[in-house]
Image (tube, rainbow, N blue to C red; front, side):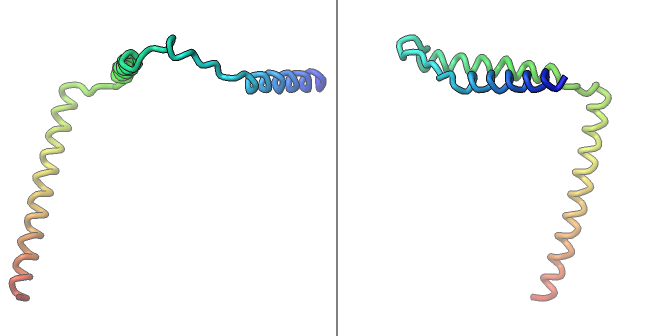
Amino acid sequence: MAEKVEKTNAEKAKIEKTKAEKPKVEKPKSERPNFLQRWANGLRRWFNETIGELRKVKWPTRKEAINLTIVVLVVSIAMAFFLGGLDFIFARLLNLII
């Protein structure tokens, strides 16, 4: 059994070595797509990946969206009153000092 493990490790090392030694073959400039083609391919790939990610999203139901919107509005109004009150108090204190 130990020989099999050593053999597989040696084989793995050999495979990794051959992978590392392969030089990257670059196409001549005449065979590569031009700038606009590469740009269009990149844009197309980006849109396809974006659409794929949007399909994975769990979208809220209409009821959840309405409830969350109400929560955001209530918290925003409460914070506006709170910060407005603090501003009023500090403005009065500053006027007393000056």
